[in-house]
Image (tube, rainbow over all chains, first blue to last red; front, side, top):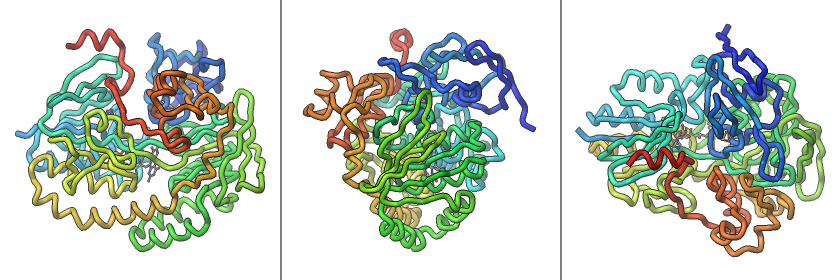
Length: 81
Length: 414
Ligand SMILES: Cc1cc2nc3c(=O)[nH]c(=O)nc-3n(C[C@H](O)[C@H](O)[C@H](O)COP(=O)(O)OP(=O)(O)OC[C@H]3O[C@@H](n4cnc5c(N)ncnc54)[C@H](O)[C@@H]3O)c2cc1C
Ligand code: FES
């Protein structure tokens, strides 16, 4: 069994395996949109490797973090928009 | 001791580090990920990393190398690179020789509906799978072009997804030609292909076929494939779509290295047109992991001044380059793909600029001036490659920082 840690996505708590990226934690939380585009469309992860910036979320109060690039840490607070 | 800085910890970067360190250079390695491996050797779970990766990762572990993981190079100045750490702080690293090995990215071509959630790159889907994305039971259409599609279909199916279609834009004849060429130049890849196919067969496989449109609400629900005549409408939960790879050239362009056909030009020792700057791996052209490794070895040796050892790698290099040429010919993109976007299809996803707003403009510069196309956070990394294919626009200007940095950080480090 892989170890698990707890993170919060939009205020709700979720348990994810160690090594899960923030992008995947957002999907596991059932969110389909990571951000809202400037014309109001829901957007989600495209490239998975840190170049498209579609997966931007707020992590521990730091806005505009690329969720695909970061691993979940215990107690991390993730907010989508 | 020669100070060698290697940017990118993929196969090319790791091979370069190993060879340079072996040749007594003082080596620094920089990569934005928390661990080394790049696009194909990086895995959340070490047990899941491909077999070929293990000896390289072990080798890297034992080398006396300064590592900056979680850091991204954002600027190159004469004999220093400027990098940004995950938390935002900026640092300088000095070099005598610089080896750029930032790899490649997928080519995304826009079609109606491509901005819907759960439509992602083919390699993008793999990257998310690696990050723990559950796909069990999901109906997935894999589309676009290139051998990566087979690997993607295989790995997603292995993880429990239902592959409802694999749609390759190239013709059956070219694909068969690719098979023959692979058998000649790189037979090991055929076995790899069979290993993947075991998981996704008997999923429907279409050649000469591309995406006409995708529909959905909060996420994609349906995708329509076409060969220009017939339509296949399929219900789906995820679309993994990429049209091959393009070199990630921003750093090399910034440093002033000559470019040709979208990649950085190098000589036999992987030396670019700029003194003391070398490039290795897919930044010099798309050719797969084996070519990246051999280029990395040559760059590492040459940067450390060990040219005689480097020249021993030339025969292997030539063999892999042949394979690369074959690969690129077999999956050349057909002109019909230029008709995929309609007037309302968004091209620049950062600024939501449509094809209708762009297609009558003269070039990328006017597009920036009139619409802000390519001026959002991704700095045109997605749309400029698409526009190059769709309208023939060439964008060869890159300004620092090549990835967004906070103004406060830029000001506070001299
Ligand atoms: C999303 C994706 C998935 C892929 N999956 C597969 C696969 O499953 N199988 C397969 O055979 N091939 C795959 N490929 C092809 C693969 O890229 C090549 O075969 C091979 O990995 C290229 O090696 P490389 O060392 O040149 O680059 P990469 O492996 O791409 O490594 C480059 C590294 O440089 C880093 N980097 C980039 N810019 C900077 C910067 N400014 N500062 C610091 N570091 C930077 C990157 O984050 C990356 O870690 C994939 C490609 C992509 C884009
Ligand atoms: S998915 Fe593209 S930057 Fe994260």
